[in-house]
Image 1 (cartoon, rainbow, N blue to C red):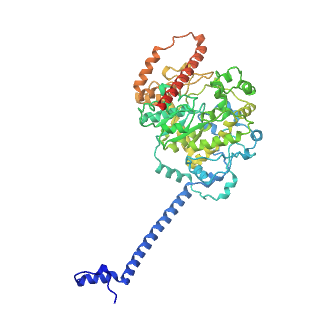
Image 2: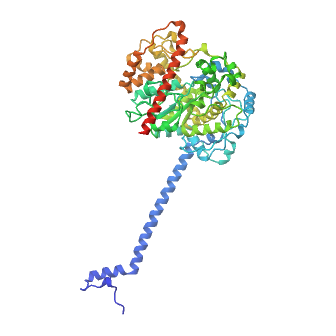
Length: 590
């Protein structure tokens, strides 16, 4: 007989209770029952978990079906209004009416002339299409170049949608998600989950109604005591046209500011440096304008730059641009692909360059990667509604009066032939504009919806009219010579006559403060915000300015003195920029 295992050997006999426990534990039958019970419990838990996972997945799919509209992903872009958009745009210029009547043959001629448009944009990846429909910004990652698809001849676009893009028809076979839910559901869902954004970067582009948007951001931030990333040394721009660097912002090097909320002054964009200043959850947006309208405005406003100085007309410059344009001369970048330059790209590319299409697609991909939203100046009211929804702001937050706008006497009507010359001269800007003109309308459809957009644009116009009647004397803009308060007089530059506003005299102090913010020009508003954020530094620079204040000059020499002051200002910027670079190099060496 085998002896029991050593672990059961005891010097004293076990009690009866202990013996029962021992027999129970050692019984194979009882052990099997225990194991079986544990197995059943595990299976039950696993079943419940799997059932919950399936429920969550089904809920997510149903939610996606209700919030993505298939026609936004695969249908060609169509005009969203029955009436012309020119009536609802704050920035539409009346002298551009000939452009609105561009015929289909002109557009097709443009497409044929510019070359292989059908090879311009590669099919989008599925995640890119979903991001486009939901209005989400694609994650920061390398994006392969893509090709633009221009509309087929026979579709006659309006001015703002001239040459608009359409999605590749091959995407229709993807069978994405069949939804017919109205945009009201999407709007209700968005409003229920949306939180107002306060970390914002606005790339202020030139002659695109960007000064008006700057005023909107200034008013929003000031009323909520937010902190602005203002230019160093009380400058009005972030050392433009140099590439932006983080130490251009007041308070960065000194570490006197812990958190910046809004960055919106002129800069030449560089995402890696901006990210050193702004938080990770920052919302990036900018605005584009039709290159034809922009070129007409730039030629008047920057008439004193070397590229334009010796030319009598815009047509004359375009006909002789190969002789008058020198990219190495200071400020000549304003004359060529200025939007591409502001976004940080090389603007010196010709329409017949072999790598034009590749460079355009790379620029578009980079902008889509870095920016959550690109607005369109020709549809300013719609842009403000889209911005309102993207930032989760109110209608009152995006209402505005047009700032830094020219009087009618300095506007010039362009011939169709001139428009074609401008598109060819600014070929890179033209392609960028075409692409984002289309993505703008996809954003409108996915975030707002056509009917809701019409309703909110009407509400915005009513609010603007009400404010104009309350705030403005005579209800509108006036020439600078008629502005009573010199503090509200906009800066005059080049051959343009920049209009401003007069306040009503019968309004109370609280209303006057609100109205005054609406019409304060860019330079004065920037100066005031700098004084609020950095009072000691502002006082220091004010005293220095008084010490070197120029003596009054005779009016006959005003134009020469203006150019002299501009040259002096540029020299100061270059000198301070050089000093900043040397200081940074010294700090790095230490």
